[in-house]
Image (cartoon, rainbow, N blue to C red):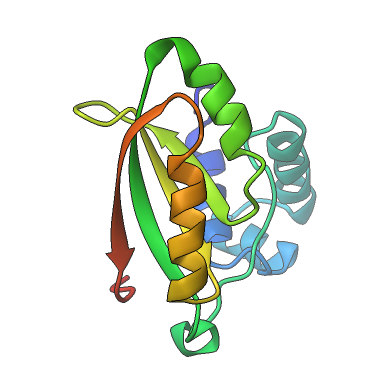
Length: 142
């Protein structure tokens, strides 16, 4: 996140904590005007630094939902095609490049273990994926 000053970083930290915090409260916390906060938010959105806002649910509200972090090894020549294919799965929440043995890490969720099993099989069958490892997320710590 180049070209961000300390105020932008503090604003992003506050928005990560609670993106619904009123602009007037953000301005008080940052010790700047409400207009300054709104202009900075607009700039962060326009420049693609802030891509959107989301809802965090209590773990109990998602009781049946299961999540895994899936490590994926990809044939180098097929990576672009594999990434395009992975984008078609609505159950894949995010994909990260990584280093080490694995090329990609995907955060995947499904409504239950049975659906997850089928989904992981579909992901594994994507042409260009050489190997995968899925780690079930048991509980959120923080």
